[in-house]
Length: 399
Figure 1: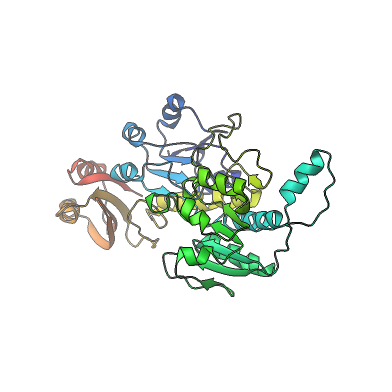
Figure 2: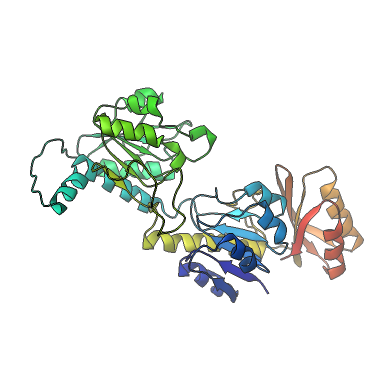
């Protein structure tokens, strides 16, 4: 019996995928649990599904020997210690594509609102003022949108922006094929000086930490707009605050923050609060009904395929082996330490138990090796126990 535990109100589409595949021991939680309750809720689970608020550290993986796979029902995986998971033989899957459209639409909408100074006008009307002046308000048509990070989301933002009549430039550390009429720029500084709206779509980590620092913000065109719907550590918030207060930038939209509240009742601590030309949203770039349904289905399908066939295609921390149809009487998955002799130990033991290899796939990543082997012959409990007891084995099973 496979036990699946889902946290943080994961969309019902995930449960539908599991039920359709024959899994019926599924436990759901509406939110993230405190650390002292989380471990107990996960005990005995083979599969755990989380979103961004549940953090899985090495102690969690050490305490859960039954855990076989983790699904991050979101784009980011920073909340999971990926190396600790891999060393325990636990692949981690996410949904890098399912909320692309939702984020792209929000970014374009924010760009148009800020170009028209709608946040300020809206606030003034709520305060009882009727300010109809057009000062500082512009159409999107003819303006230049600059995209930092021309990946799945960034490229889609560009397509939508062109449909609104905007010119699109992009900057990426890798060479990317442009979509539509977008053009690449060679340096970030040259890029920033040309665009009216800058939108960020880069991963987190050391390479992008404070990418938009005081120097980069100063290089932006006077009166430009900055939008960040990527990672909270990418923008130096203090430097952005100074640029907005001084009037160097005319507006900003921020959806992610260096430190975010842990619950809906905890206020955001940011100097940007209260600025009339700033849109602040609570990390909701991908929070639409459509994207959440797509994410639920995408991640659940990856987990289902792993449980049913051992495929790890799309795992973010694990050797990737794509799906292939079972060719023998049984399939054995073997996660092992990536050391000399590991495959020899596996095949020798199979020979001892009279198992004939029909098909075999092997991939390694860092300290972990992963083999899927289809065999003819009877896979006995004694064989599985013997394989599990071997020093090279991290985890193994018949699927």
